[in-house]
Length: 502
Image (cartoon, rainbow, N blue to C red; front, side, top):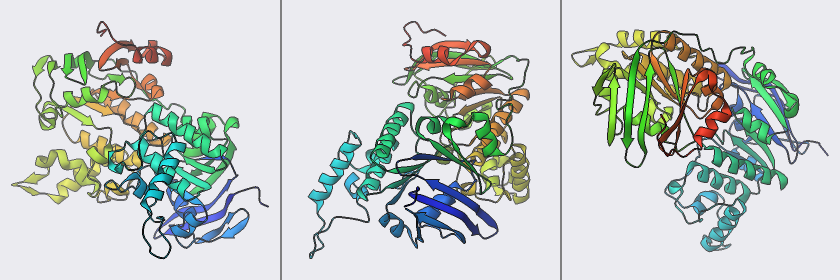
């Protein structure tokens, strides 16, 4: 009997012109949570698809309980007890939770083929109960939060008697509280005998859950390590192939004059009496727990939503901003939290995405000059070191980190004074994070005033000159970067503001 419930040896997968996996290995024990880490483009997604029967490897072998298997399609992998839960839930939003759970393996009456709805609803509710879900199986899938939809995907895996569960970036879109709930569910599955491959960019996920971690880099297997025996520094070297000696390359800059100031800014139901300012060359952190109102403040400054009170000053002059176009014309740019939904047109090329805000620069009499568009797109894509073959590559073909760089390049196309970055490193790997921090440092040194909204404490502490903390729609404190600590920020992030500290 094999020590491993799943083992892959020498797996190689080739697509036209590219080796997506190059002689990779992996071993998973029964009842183990095994982290799989690597930068975007390292081969993790292709690897999942080989395990689940979506892709067939050109070379290598896969074993289940020591016996060689060769899945022809996902149905065969499911029948063998393998299930995958993806970062972007592949659900049917207009169908019920029950229908989503049993899609493809419905309970039917022998002979008549009639669907046994009552039995399916009962079993679905039982599965949800095991996961401590707070919703019913008759609920429409589209009415659920991302965390709840992931819970349904886990229930679906359990309904198929999955014994190997692959979780692909499951915490990327979750709050801290939702992530903690997912951790508990994952540990419960492990304790009941399931074996779990947990793919994540977040070191805290790995330390919280896994006992082993395997690293891929550039489509190759780098190594497998005991989680309690590897340091952050060693893991970063394994993932990116070099030491990131200064992950937060914030240059020392003499700050200039105040560029943007908000005074007692309010939006009914979201935040009240918010005041802060940002200077030329400064990186101002805006932090707090999820739901504190940070994004809503930035959307109001940028004109996506309208204020109910307060004032916005730009270079000392009070301004009224009625929409994003007005904000950009005044010199304010905004990188939204959800780059795929709000920052990019995914089925457009890189160059066209970058030049979208400045069509007047690349067009005449309503006609776009393709040469100008290409040149400007190429210049700005190179400025932020976007990894792509040409500016005609679709935005959807890029890794998360490179998509984020395209959104930054899009901001640079306009003549801006203030750049608002909302969770700029969300869902990107450690190498891409370092690149984005470097870009931020360069922008600050060029005199841009930068507001960074972030839930990640290390980057707030590592990159910001000054930090404004919010809780429940109010500012509860302000700290200089050199005097800030995680404890002091959290203390203010959980403090109810009674006196509008500024």
